[in-house]
Amino acid sequence: MKLQGTWTAIITPFKSDNSIDWDGLEKLVEFQISQGIDGLVPVGTTGESPTLNWEEHNDVIDRVIALCKERCGVLAGTGSNSTEEAIASTRHAVKSGAQAVLLVDCYYNGPSSQELRDEYHGAVAKEFPNTVVVPYVIPGRTGTALSVEDLAILHAQCPNVSAVKEATGDLDRMARTRKLLGQDFSILSGDDDITFKMMTDPEICADGVISVASNVVPAAVSRMVNLAAKGDVEGARQVADAIAPLLGIVTVKVDNPRKLPSGETVVVNDRYRNPLPIKTLMAGLGMPSGMCRRPLGKMTRAGVEVVRTAVSRVWKSNPEVLSPIADFFGIDIEARISEDSVWYSLAQ
Image (tube, rainbow, N blue to C red; front, side, top):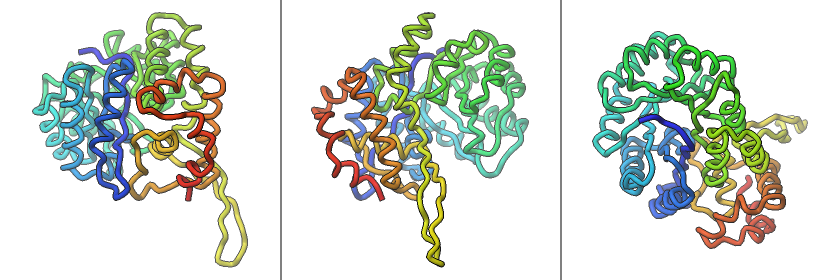
């Protein structure tokens, strides 16, 4: 099983009481499949795995696998900062039918690269030799990283470690991954805004993306990825340009005022990270979403306006990118974007 193409890191929709919206999840899965996605990634960072308890975590994986019914792939998020938890979660996912699992590098306790290789990724891979194991390297969130060299050693020891989700932003590292691990190893982009670059750089030749933006524009992201994979660089570039505003809001950075106890007003730069911006966008458009669980909250009005402006630009320039949402969910996109009250309700 070679992982390639477009895999949506699907959100976990919530109801107003913060319980999981199972009907909404089913609609989102069906929407993704209808748009020709290659696979879904439940309960990754975008699916808010840190704030789901393990029962919810396992239930989401079970539901997504059952809903997909082999119509697309499922790469189940089963990582933890505890190897035993990761093994238990992977065991559950495999029993439910997952053929591949995504393991984020251990966060907070900060193991070395060697420990990540031997005591975490390697331990899971050896326990489940018939399951594709995908290390997820994102040091900006975990504070640690599996090195390319240890990834190469791990792949030689455990051939089922046959792909990596690259969210380091380090193109030189990715080129070294390709050099050391060869063309049969899958490199998947973990950053929407550099997927095009990763796939068209001859030293990287990424195989696809685990995408956040494809929650909203799965067909467009898939088209970009497929064109890049075929070598149609200009065609892929045109699609990438059309959806660029949406690729740029996975993280939203805005300056917000703070009033100190002394009465002085200062400005602080707030960084609203995934999945808050994408869920804000989906809620604004009327898709099943709900807001995020604490400690993620709501963006300020300035942050929400960044999201609204991005989707407005895409709607104005390339409405066909968003039209599948209108058709599938019965949404008047123009009306939703234009209605101030919709977006004001999503802000602090």
